[in-house]
Amino acid sequence: MQAKHIISILLLLMVVLGIFNIPEKTSSEKKKQINHPTVFVHGYKGTHNSFGNMLDRFEHMYGWGQTALVYEVSPTGNLDVYQLNNGQSAEPMYVQVIFENNRAGIQDTSEWLAKLMAHMKETYQVNSANLVGHSMGGLVSMHYIENYQDYSTYPKVKKIAAIGSPFNGIYSDAYFQIHHDPAAEDLKPDSFALNSLRLNKDAIPDDLKVLSIGSTGDSVALPESVEMIRNIVDEKQLTYKMIEDPALGHSALHEDSRIDQMIYSFLQYEKAERTEKD
Picture 1 (cartoon, rainbow, N blue to C red):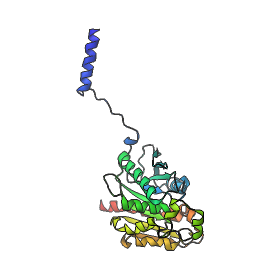
Picture 2 (picture 1 turned 45 degrees about the horizontal axis):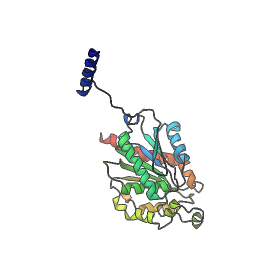
Picture 3 (picture 1 turned 45 degrees about the vertical axis):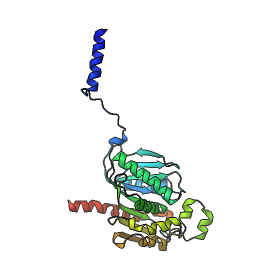
Picture 4 (picture 1 turned 90 degrees about the horizontal axis):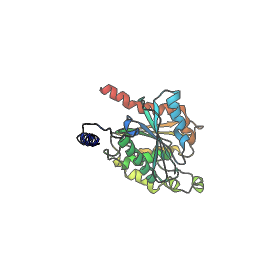
């Protein structure tokens, strides 16, 4: 009995002195690393399907990388994260964002975006990223860039692509007879949110590269409104594409193979640029 007591004391001393290396519990998330992902942000009333089909095409039809993470954001900003790549390291990597409250205003939505971007940096060691936004998702992404640049907390955004984003608002009075929520208020021409984007344009980093895509067939984000990104982004940083197609409507923009190619080509420029520098 006394011998057992002595052995117990010796074992305790060995643990205290660090002779036995007790492994620290680490979540499976923290063991993964996501390299320079592209984050896809849906627009007003968006769902999983808003970018789900595009990401499925990127991965399974074209072989352009894979979706690594899906973030579901609750109306209170809580995050549910689903890791899909099973620890594989295929590049490029994509992150899909789904806001449960898909009718919130631009400021609230960009705060939620900032929260998940901070989570990516802390949990997956993401130091840089790209953003792709459809419709109001492009406005939210630009608002995020203007307001969240503490790179000790958030990844640095290298590129942003806005698809059918009405930077001067939606011009249809009939549209606002149907929609009355905070997001709709922000989408009105001369809203406080849209004016803020223009007033804060000097906060946009000089090295940010921007792609804006619109369609002549879009009756929601009219070409004149999409083009108003020129009042926010310096021409030297901007690539502007207007697709001449009267049949290509607003909700079809993220389902179009021409836009798939534009997005992927834009995102891949940086990879080529790094290769040239190396």
